Length: 104
Image (cartoon, rainbow, N blue to C red; front, top):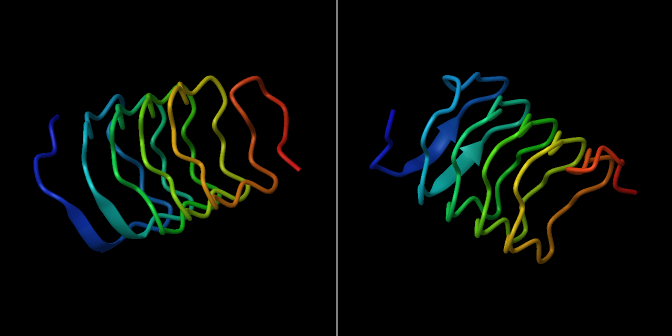
């Protein structure tokens, strides 16, 4: 599944994306707390300044994504590819990091 459009001002609290969804380069804005992005391709995505608290990014590809000022508190990033991700001003308190440790 490819998403060519922007998901702007969307509300997806607790939403489950299809397994391995391709969101390559997508721009997200809105409410995504608790959403399931496990195994999703978010390479180069612009997901800045949004609420992703308690979202599941297990084994997701976030390579080069812009997470500037995003809220990832208590998100699950286990086994996610975070190469080149912009975490400037990102809230990560309680997030599970790729190596399984919890961010303080």
